[in-house]
Length: 230
Ligand SMILES: NC(=O)c1ccc[n+]([C@@H]2O[C@H](COP(=O)([O-])OP(=O)(O)OC[C@H]3O[C@@H](n4cnc5c(N)ncnc54)[C@H](OP(=O)(O)O)[C@@H]3O)[C@@H](O)[C@H]2O)c1
Image (cartoon, rainbow, N blue to C red; front, side, top):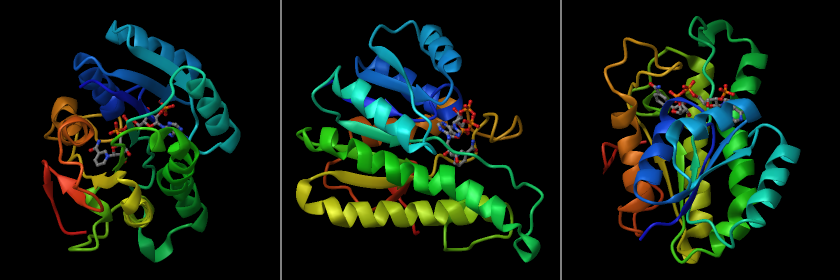
């Protein structure tokens, strides 16, 4: 049955594709992002009346609170939260001389942002019969077989997986499923044109988790619809 979802960082890339696929399944979707022009253009590009643009900067508590207020005036619950917004700007860094500000900046968006957004939307999620929280993580954050590339981004995604584990444990008795997803290497502004996967492929597991996966799947790191080691 179609539900109500919110996707962060949805004005382009994987987030926009997740919104497109959910809207195609008749879901009502809040397409959120930090720039009003950009989210309005993205929503128009989908020509789907069930898609509603709302400004939400995941690094700004006031912006998060305003988005909660706006959305709570429109719907009485939320079934799915997709914490998709992310940044990656340390392609040339090495952990051997990583500037601490780079790490802080990456944590603000990739780790603390999803934590704050999840906290803020929990009251609406708790009103769903079967809520799901999906954190879009990355293979470069895996502790198993970690490589040296993009250290600040990678560490921020390892910590995001920690956020997933902690929320999954804290919400287990509430029946709210919380998982991390690795979308694979995807052709977006972040992934670049050389990436092997399309946005459709990158969004697939996220949309599956949002709409079809067993509610009992929680506290997992998932790629291609299957759990993988952290
Ligand atoms: N592409 C890949 O190969 C790949 C692989 C593994 C994981 N991922 C993850 O997948 C997610 C989506 O990435 P993508 O490839 O679609 O990247 P993208 O095309 O660069 O899109 C990133 C999105 O995040 C938004 N964003 C950044 N900072 C934000 C903030 N403070 N508040 C709200 N939105 C913000 C961006 O909005 P603006 O337009 O305003 O900047 C944009 O909409 C990310 O979490 C990324 O780490 C991607």
